Amino acid sequence: MSQDDRNPVDINEQTEQHEHELIDTNEEIMRRRNKVTELRDRGIEPFGAHVKRTHFSTDIIDHFETLEDTEVTAVGRLMTIRGHGKATFAHVADSAGQIQVYAKLDVMNEEQYNLFLTLDIGDIIAVTGRAFRTKRGEITIEIRHFKMQSKALRPLPEKWHGLKDVNLRYRQRYLDLIVNPDVRKTFETRTRIVSGVRRFLDGRNFIEVETPTLGPVASGGHARPFTTHHNTLDMDLYLRIALELNLKRLIVGGFDRVYEIGHCFRNEGIDTRHNPEFTMIEIYQAQADYEDMMELVESMFSTVAQEVLGTMVVEYQGKTFDLTPPWTRITMTDAIKKYANLDWATITDDRSAVQAAKALGIKLKDEQMTKGMVLDAVFSELVEPHLQGPLFLTDYPVEISPLAKKREDNPELTYRFEAFINGWEFGNAFTELNDPIDQRERFEQQASEKAQGNDEALAYDEDFITALEFGMPPTGGLGIGIDRLVMLLTNAPSIRDVIFFPVMRPQAD
RNA sequence: GCACCACUAGCUCAGUUGGCAGAGCAGCUGACUCUUAAUCAGCGGGUCCGGGGUUCGAAUCCCCGGUGGUGUACCA
Image (cartoon, rainbow, N blue to C red; front, side, top):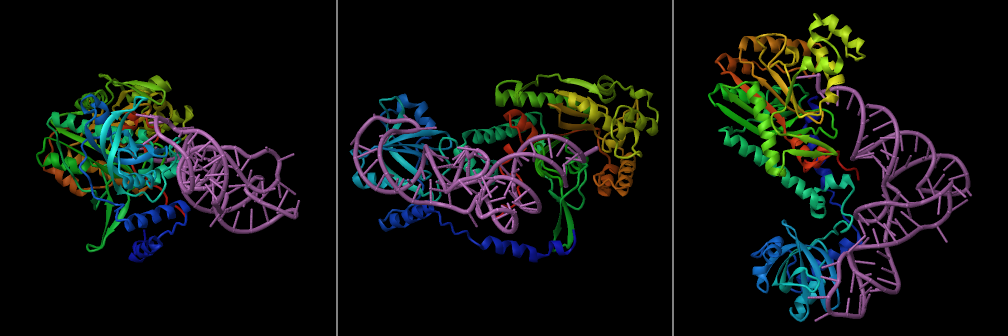
């Protein structure tokens, strides 16, 4: 990014564009605006004060036996109106659900009834009246009086088909939430999943921490970062791509069990499983290793699924995944033997690895790849599609695992696993590398890869090595993509369905 | 990045071979005091995503662009 690209002038231009307040000449909107003026002329405030709510809609319905014929006050948005001359039915929706209301001229005074007739779908009102059951059996509030809380100046999307246009659903999520009740449920479930994860970890004596989103180095993962600039310090900063290194600094500092749930940012492609800004959880436990992390993953996933869904057997897009522990464990080399029919033990050097991959019909980016990189390529091509899971794939090559400890029995491999469900990577964990000399060599190896054009090689973080030089206890570490976990447990086909405001291009006018 | 698909009233969608721009819901007027996708009668509402081209004539065919979706590539 050049200096000019972040010149404040750009920001001003953008602001100027937003100042062109759209003057909407739509008839319906004009009509509703006029009503605001008319209401005020009559001494009625269309954007009124709050009113003491006695019950949510569903409370009245669920506890009707005790509430029948008592006076209740419900508050919500008018979703439907059915007028019958001197009586009118409507439905009022609140965050819990909706309830029918009945406006009747005999019961209200004439001024109130006429005011009720001026209401539009979308208006927010507070209604007070007697709870009763209609002849058709629906629990209803017979309105004694009501108050305007917010006039809706724009019409809601259609009541029956809802809002389907995904472009509008993502850009105007509030409308999606108003008219598509399942969307609200999905996001409520998201919250329950995240709080379930917190409860699970808190129960194991982990403490939640917060570390910076902005930093001078974006390391701890393999991804291109977003850059930004601090004006006063006149320095470039990066948005974090992972939580890893800061959390391990905390382990060095003496915290035994920490986790952080927060946004990470990766300047990469967008598809049904990737949003540039996404939610990660990373968990670090001193005096633990990757086997402990496997136990933690299967226990956490199954516990949260049980809590949120009431079962450990998850249906996702027509497929079934049983999260009940223990999950299958298979080493990477065993998986390759099984699915690619390749005995990795016979591969002795980088050259023979490249040849073996070619023989299997794998396209390689270049001929200079190391044995470990080839292993990963073969794996992605031939093995990953088979990993329906849930399972743990273990013992990754050291070249592609620069933060993981080498295996004592085979220093080409590491104590690392990834968790797979539905062929997706759900978690990545290691026995953390705590040897600062080895860590420095790994960073240097990554730096030389970066110099050769791999712009996703791990960024060198000198300060992290300094931290390790003070000594980090043996530690197990784990990262999980929260959005994907939410997708799995809410049966959402796209990550955009579990993120309130996914990244979108600005709408062209 | 590439390929394919979509874009028509506030919303959901039709639109035949290139021949006057349509429906349902929402809205407006009227009727109706237990309806619930209320009903009945009537009415209004359009930059057919934008620009260019072909044609007597384009929502429709062609080209360029925009936004979105899906797939693919990338994401060690």
